Image (tube, rainbow, N blue to C red; front, side, top):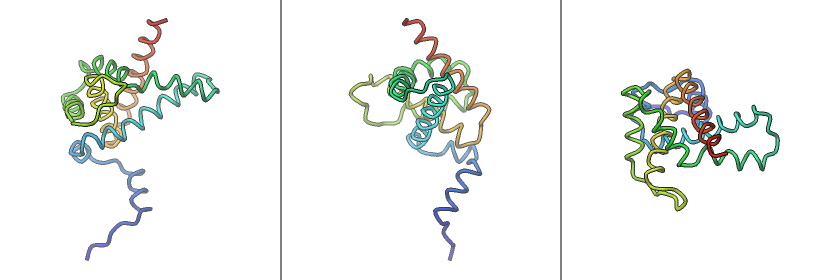
Length: 151
C-alpha cells in the first residue's frame, strides 16, 4: 500500500520544489489564476510598502487600482506581443475558462484578467522566477503609466 503524504510534507514540497512546466501547464486554469492572484497582490503590496507608504487604508485603496480586472486586462493586452508561445497558450486557457464575472467588472476585462493571473500562477508554480519577476515589474509599470496619465 502506498503511503500518503502528511500535510507538513505536502507544504514542504510545495514551498521547496516547483512543479515542472508540464505539470503546471496541465493544471486547471482557474487554479493557476487562484495562485496568480495571490502572487500579483503580494507583489503590489510589497511595491506600495517599498514606495514608503505606511497608511494601511491608503495602501488598500491604492492596491485595488492595480489588482482590478480592468488594470490586469490592460496589462495582458500590453504584454501579449512579448509573450512566448507557451505563455500565450496559458493566457488563452485562462481567458477562455468559464467563471462567474463580478458585477463590478466588464466580462471581457475579467476574462483577460483571469488569463493574466493564470500566467502569473503558471510562472510561479513552474519555478520561472526570473521571468515572473520581469513580468511583475512590467505589469506594475504599465499600471503606473496608466494611473499617471489620468492625473
